[in-house]
Image 1 (cartoon, each protein chain N blue to C red):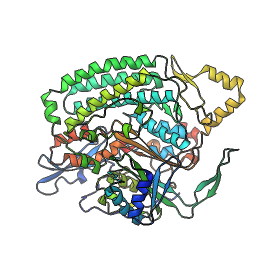
Image 2 (tube, one colour):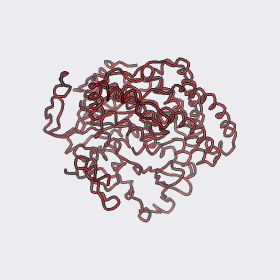
Image 3 (tube, chains in turn purple, yellow):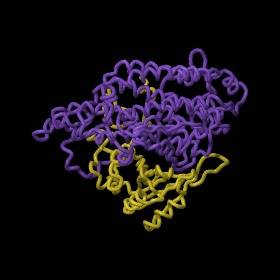
Length: 437
Length: 197
């Protein structure tokens, strides 16, 4: 195997020096460009940079002249790995990208694969997908509120946000067996049906969350520190958002009611009533209000789905696609369904052969390109999937909203102070697992 | 919402010799020569019907020389017949454009040879939307975007050799010592019993 030599590339004259990502290069970093400006390094271990984001700041006194995000510290090669596994195994990889929105990743991937296959998941599976992804949006926004609050000094908000999120993760755990990285949504439907008390669990959660959200509002809305740190900071108007490719709550806070649940509805979301919250201020405060309202709208959608919760199967009928292993939730977690084991081992040779073939080889997917996008908590999450007609993805590229939105951190920080850079990054809400993939 | 026909009409009227197709899943793709890319991007941005405000995504797909593709998929056995298709390896650079006002999206595909992969950078038309994505495609596929202000690696270390998403780049087998001076061999050379020990 011959590795390609790096091809010639255009060198930017204004880029001074290399910024290697292997660390320990502090001494090579110039600490002064000229007399008044200074380059300092923030991260990748800085507690306010959301994991392993490294920012190289050019400063003049306290004023930020330029922000260069340096990323890649969490690059795990998920897209490459997926090319060596079957289509169903892909779900297990992609759920680990944006770890605060695992179900959105699974959903976008599975919708793309289903479109290539020409199948559609049953109604009940779509309803469960919608409920769980909307709960996932609430959980993600809660973490944003918690970590964002902590970064700005509202430490009690951190405790409250994570506390409420844990209740949502309990719901995910009760259905998929895992708090995060569920691999619950599969091409063709769901890994297995929801539990008999699923609707009650969701309703209990919907009764619980609004009272807590009122507490956050009481805690934060008139808090003078919270106000002065957020208002007027990190302004990016609608045109500039589009210029930088920014989507999601940041774009909506700039007044554009763009939501993929409206533009490209998925999981029958067009049947339900919900508003797309927008704001006019386009600053960090506007994003805070938009996200709070989005959590309420998510609950509104979930209530409507629960009111008319469909029955039936949760996986397509086609036995060439449907994952054969029927699983059930026992007292010790998810395991094989004894009735199904009895069926393939004792009753039907054909069922055993089908099971064996699907589990070892998977199914083939017709050749073609597909781009499937869902509205993740951070914006447009798109899966550009290429199949060459085999049982493995030929190429899956993920359009990660965190990755794209991070481009705007420079524009949003320029002219502000170092402490405002933290507000800007927090208000963009990047998840490094998604940025670096 | 602009229909596919309206988008095709607007683009083909402005730029000559643009090919397009609509895939089985109903997605519109324009197949472009690298020289046509910037003209088409300009039309997409400025035309009132196409009105693609957002350059959403740029990605690459590598089709190496001699790669097998499916010629026929018999329904009887389920196993495809394959033929070797290409004498020269190519990289497809795929752009997804989205119109917020129109609510539609479509794809541009630019095909370049993989031993001399050069594409004009979209940063001249959509100034900042794809600076990261183009760096990622450069990093992963070795496609040089000419005119990009900062054509450097983004996810891999700056001194990395090779472009990991090319099909001739192995999964594993890169000479990196892990703990105990072990290296991870590529999958087809991996002995699972040994790895377990």
